[in-house]
Image (tube, rainbow, N blue to C red; front, side):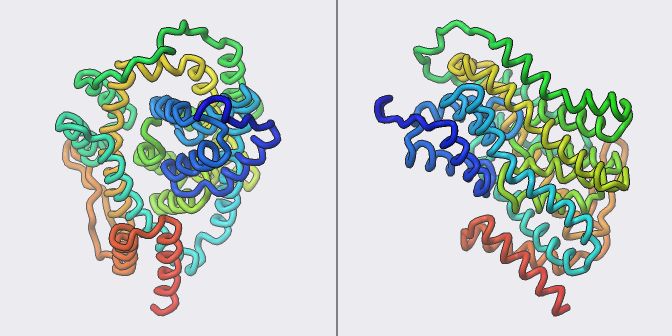
Length: 424
């Protein structure tokens, strides 16, 4: 494809198409990226294949949701800052609105037995989804015994010794720098001088922190809204490797702060998996429950959820609008790529930790934390939940034997969970 074949859309067309993408972007980051490739590269010819791939490579270097960042980058390529803002926001807003509505419905019906039966099916399906994530990401990220060792150490650090997530990520980045990776092929653009876009950086930083500052002024520095804004802003900076990488840290922190219970955390992930948009939409669901339970207020629940949406996704605009003008240099930086390779390897171990903990909590509802010196391990104690085991087994068969899509598998396992409730 050459430049003369490309079709430049109007801002109206850009808005319409990215709203459509935001409404149908199921299937996690891989499915969302494939959807954008088909709609924007193959069908509409808005961007060249090489530019799409270059943008994707850049987004994998960044913290935060890479699919939303790729949407922002493509919008920026087509219409500058307005295009990037429209594409990035519309990629997220439909799913964000839906997840907050579901959070409200959840708080109204969380104790209804039939709702709990349906959620048991969702939780069982999530076990299969996490296993699949470990296998897929591991196949791509574990290129060599050194990186496999990084993944194993990350798993043991978080599963058995409760090492904080940021320390695991920093250690993995340093390990990646020590191991090293081959440099990418040089490009002509890599010699272009970098011009730092100060105006875009200042504007994005100001907008990112504006709601937090308003909350501090209106509610005081110790209010829940400020705590939510600061916490999810921190996650936005350290979240490399996708939403699954942060779940162990998010789960531990949210439970420790009294925002959610371990069971509610599982439910939050299940809802995030069944809605369009990035899986990281688990953040506003958790924040909504925090507002509902800590402040006993629907208004505060909605404000906390909206604060989480803003502080989760606003940083991505900063990374794109500041980094995209020097894209070739960033992609060609060997040190960055080496650090990312180490982080990607650790992410495999982190996701395995999340999967193991979630599976134990779902299959053994009375699981307890065992502490022996530095060892802190979630142990499967008490009688197992045989319905959960049956549903998890069904989800694994549908995913790995029959190769059903995620949404199709989730739907059937949820229905079977309901049926088990009515026949039991």
